[in-house]
Image (cartoon, rainbow, N blue to C red; front, side, top):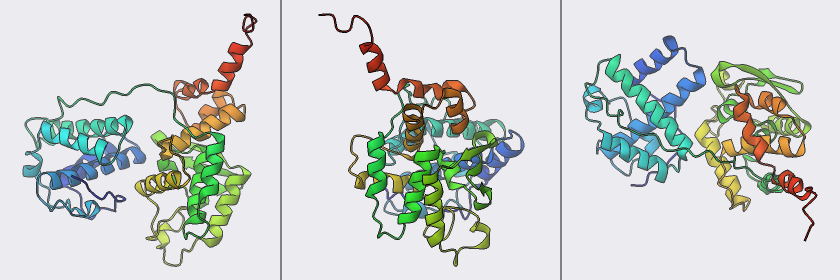
Length: 330
C-alpha cells in the first residue's frame, strides 16, 4: 500500500472527538500551541490512514484529500490493536518515520485513546493499552560536516523560483539551530536588527542572534518575496508556500530531503532536525561555544539534552589519545 504523501492541508473538519481532545489538552492540561499542533497533525495522519486501510475510500486517493468529517464514534469503536500495528508499519515504511517520530505518534495515540476511554466515555476498551513504543537507542547525533553544509548551500539551483526562500530556510537551520516548528512560525515583526524572538518548546520565549549569512539570506529572500496574493493574516509570516500560505512542516521536510539528494550527499539521511544538529555541532566544534551557551541557543530546558554534542568531536578525541606520552613508544 503506497500513498502519495503531501503536506498536511488545513483541515476543513476534524472528528468531534479530536476537537474535544485538543480542547482538553489546551484548557485542562495547559499544553503549548506547538504541542497541540503536533497532536493534531498526528491524529490527522492516523485517521486518514485508517479510512484508507479499512476501505472507507479508494486506495489510490490523494492522501491529503481524505475527508475526516464523517468519522463518528461508531468508526472509532472499530479500531483494534492490529489496526494500530498496521499504522505503525505505514509510518516506518511509507512515511519513513524514524523511531523518535514513531514513538511520538504512539504517545499521541495513547493519550488520545485514554481520553476517549476515561474522559469522553466513547470507547469501552482502549486499543492502545498493549501498544508498545519503538525502542529508541541513544546514539550520537547525525549531522552534516562543514564541507557537506557548504556543498548543500552551493548546490541549490539559482534559476528555481523557490531558490531564495529555500536557501534562506537552509541557512537559518544551519546557522541558528531552530526547531522545525520554530522556523515555520518565524514572524517578521519579531526580527529586530540582528535578533529574532521566537516561542519555543513549552511556549517559552527566547532570543536568537542572527549572523551576517543569515541576515543576508533573509534580506535577499524578502527582496523577491511576493505577497500580492497573500491574505493579510499571513503577510507577517516569513516563510510562505507556493499557495500563498505559511509554509508547513511537511513541505519543509520534503524540500530539505530534495536538496540533500540534489547535493549528492548520500551518507547522511538528513531531516530538518538533523540540520539543527548540524548547527549545534558546527558551533561546538568550530566556534568554541561552551555547553551552557549552546544550551541557551538551542532552547534546551535540561543541559543533559545539550551534552550529546560534547561527544561528537572525534578529532579532539584523536588528539587527546595522541598526546599520551606513551603514544610513540614502539
